[in-house]
Length: 141
Image 1: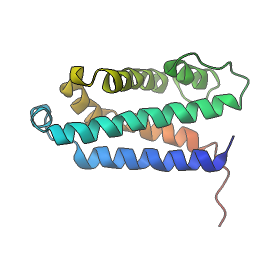
Image 2 (image 1 turned 90 degrees about the vertical axis):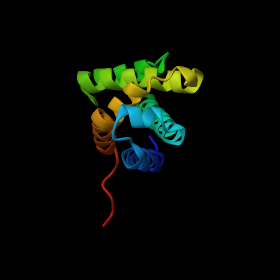
Image 3 (image 1 turned 135 degrees about the horizontal axis):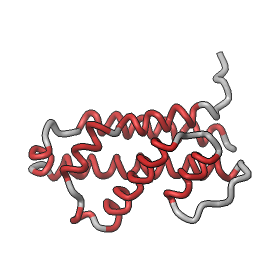
């Protein structure tokens, strides 16, 4: 596993989460009325999910786990190896569903759900980052 690549992906994930926090709307109605905010949030949520998938695949490639056939299965592999728990696995698999809608069917995004994600589920990304950070070598002084 390339620790430098993992560290760079973790920093990119942190930037996405900060951007989401900075731009999330106070209400779902405010989000529905602001196309620019919608774009910023959808892009950063999509990036955050993709970064999580990329990190999961990187760790799984260095393990005995079989290669996952889907993005969601990547999180199942991490759950089986004990890197993440079942609850985080389920939340990240749901996030993959959002990512797929955002990437393939942008017009069908439910902004009420996006609003809820930005206020209630950013800790999923933080929890994932902590799990991934445990696989980085200690930083030099």
